[in-house]
Image (cartoon, rainbow, N blue to C red):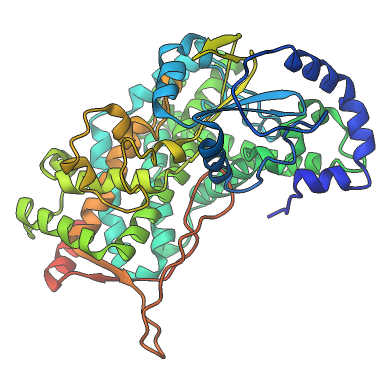
Length: 513
């Protein structure tokens, strides 16, 4: 992975002058416009020209934003090189603005580095309008009742892989998420995990990892000064252009290779039902084809890393909270018994397991800052002026730790959803972590059952515990930390995963076969 200097390093490097000269007029215009506003929300005071550029964190931004929330309130204004940023740290404010006023808050900012690596037409970033609605319709139509069957079969195979090599649970989770998504998007059956890494799953891993880095606003100065993207790659200091060119190739491979696979299957008359195969006949132009490719990638690329991150968090939480694990297992044993595996249709009968899933999604939101919105026109809210073209960031991390709705928020306590009886959608993580308004993640209908069934089946058949040192016998405490990027994936931690019983082993083998 390429290492990226912070904005502070950029400003003190030897090549900043050419880039700053290119950007100077752009900045002056923005700054003059920004200073004309009154009654902006509070926030940290910036410096002339660069504003809050040096204040912006390059990693775990949600922690800094939450600290600012405690100092300035739920709505914070920042300015970076003249570009206004509004950070919302209250679910109620996000609902009022992104939900009720979605007609002006549903656009997406063009994050320059994501544009350079070829993601600007994805469903995550495409501008609000007919193209977005068409892609959402295509994805929605692909989520049929057979989706549950695909998810359950793939998760059963996950249990079998876990039985064979529990230490590889992270890889097994990636393989499982990939198998579900690739089947739905392209009708593609992944290679069995014991035969090595599937090439399509690997494509997604690489491209999504690069997406996550490029989307980090503080990692590349071009994200704050978009006109820098016109600097030629040969120019001193244009290393981001060379990085973008390499990453764009991986984006194009992720979009094109699985699509071409399905196209060839359809031509041969052997394609299995999928989003791509069902809509190929509608393609009449290059524009139609690009739209279908990105709709499929919205399932394929958008769901892979997020589902995996949630489930890695689940394994971490079970290591840290054995009492929760035992309580969930007791519910499964009582409701399901030990002669079959839980199904997605059992979800309403397993309220504590459902609460475990909600608490996993709350305790460590997969995307702690969501995906930024763009304000289409000037707005007034609670007496504050919110400037047109502001980047609107939802601090989901702070929202899922709001003491008004989540007491003792650092505790992992599923009981809060069953006992606290707070009558508000703002106390339900499922109403927060998937976003707000017209840009609510359409993959929620896929992600929820995927995460639920993986949690339920794993708890039904395995125990997850802290690992012990083989020499000293001492318990190894997992370190709670996340990998860099906009997707919060726990760093590698040791854990011990064992079958609950010989009956569980036989059940897994029988169901997997």
